[in-house]
Picture 1 (spheres, each protein chain N blue to C red):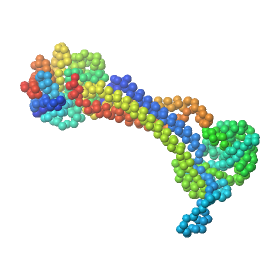
Picture 2 (picture 1 turned 60 degrees about the vertical axis):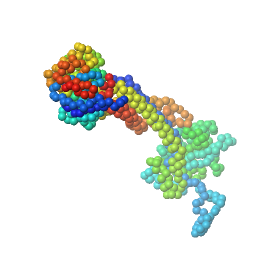
Picture 3 (picture 1 turned 120 degrees about the vertical axis):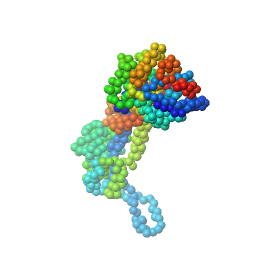
Picture 4 (picture 1 turned 135 degrees about the vertical axis):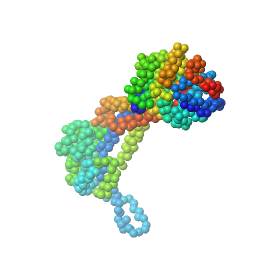
Length: 419
Length: 221
């Protein structure tokens, strides 16, 4: 009953100055709209840029690096000596490049509960023969289906069908830059020479575009089998095992574990691409800072308007107090005025933010480096709406709090006698 | 209602004793006027008695209850329930209709339902002969009508006491007459206790008791 009365009075005061109220509410609406739009757009862009790398990078990559042996014979021989051994000019010995026992490792990994999927890979250094010229390049031998499931391979294949890699023997998908350099189109045959001198003819079944031009100029994809044939290796020859985990944050720990357990080298995505993490967190920090600044500015707007309203309504406040409304009641009246501006403006702002970001989502955005992106990216994360809503209420509450406190402490005698 | 040794000082710009040991009592269904020259402290006394001004020495008691040192919230409740006000200016809220203005203190008290309060407000307006203006906004009324609405508002909670600070001070002769008649009617027919500050000696002469003040002291009561 009492709160209802207080609310009625607040509404009447609000409506009596509806233009001012509207201006205040529009201030909140505008800032929430911009807050939501800015965050959605920035995060969308962030995700896009991160995805460029993160989507097609394994969370943990197992490989074998040719390096000098960690246990040198002298260390064994002088094990009990108190002195130091100095050995100079150690060279790595000629080892096989492939991961030994790769089949067993893959099947064990696939049973691991943390693992989303495993994709084997072979990297082969090759020369593409174009007339009398040789272009250096890399052929990645992949399992097309797994590669697509885990790393969205199909998103980057701009022409042709990636499944042809599996279905057509001796087929290759060329990087777009590379295809342009070689002036080949789908259906043509290219000659490839390995570093060991073996030659193979590969049929072009598609082009891919990764978004990173340097990669597109040198890389191409073939099936694992084709690559093994190219290298003259056995069917168990695998140089990389790409592991995608269910939780990307578990990658560093998993990498360490795999490294010691399988006796291979392992690198996690965070270590391999730390600069990306930093970049995206700084970008979101900036957009949050701008958004919150907008809200605080709107808060000052509300503060000003309420302050003015209190000076205008000095008489009304005095009379409310004279007829028996306490300071607390007056306080509540002004707080509810501020909160209704905040809630109304905030709700409109959330709608506006959704509208504006949907609009941006429709704007065409075509770029050579991002073949899958047709419009500006927007991230419709409900968290932004939640934060925006909460923040609009908190800001308006504080914007109303100080004027309300002033209003509640008005001495009615001073006002009434002052006439 | 009693006032015991009430003194008040104004400290700005220099300390002046504006009220000096005021002692008096007011009994039920009395119609009392306070008169005195400008600046003699009569309005100040009224505001202290009204509980709105709490900065004084001494004590006041309303309905046998001491008001000294009570919290602002409790004093607001006392004003709401036991005291009705009529000021020199009507002080109606322009955002609300006449009816709503009258209902406000009743709604605040919350003793009756909204329907009942509305009905009571109509009755009070009827007593004052302005029930036809109930749904208008205050700024559509004449000065005399506004003052009558203010009286209706003062009556809504059936207060023990109605206080007036120069309620006719801003009205012409005819309207003053009407307002005075209303007060007299309230005093005689409804046994309403009234305490009115005025500098209109003619007005005061028709009340049942006159308290005259000079230089912060009561010189006749």
